Length: 137
Ligand SMILES: [Zn+2]
Image (cartoon, rainbow, N blue to C red; front, side, top):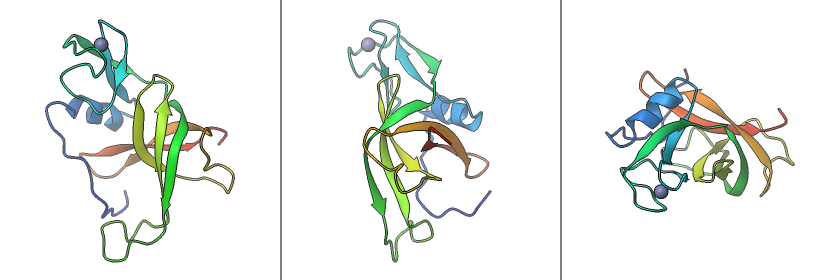
C-alpha cells in the first residue's frame, strides 16, 4: 500500500457496510425494497421514495463518465502528491452517480459518456476506495 495524503472517508454507522464491501473488493449499495432504486451516498432512507426498507445489493461495477475534471496543481494541499489526478463523476449502471478517481487512462479515455469499470485501491487497513479504470483495459 502506498502512502496517501489526500482526504479519506469517515466511516459511520450509515456507510460502514459500503466500506466493508469495498474492502472485500465487492462493492454494494443500498437498493430500496419498495421502489427498487439504488442510491449513493449511503444513508438510512431511500433517496427516491423515503422508504426505510432496503437491502445492501452488489454492484456490477460498470458505469459511464457523467463529468470529470483533472486536478493539475495542488501545491500546499492534501492532493499535492497525487497530481495530476482525474476526478470523475460516474453514473453507475444501477443509476447512482458516484464521485471517484479514474486511473490508468489514455488521452481519449477521459470523456463524458466513456465506459468505465470499478476497481479498488487498498489505501490502508481500514479503507479501500472504489475507483475506476477505462472499461476496455
Ligand atoms: Zn425507494
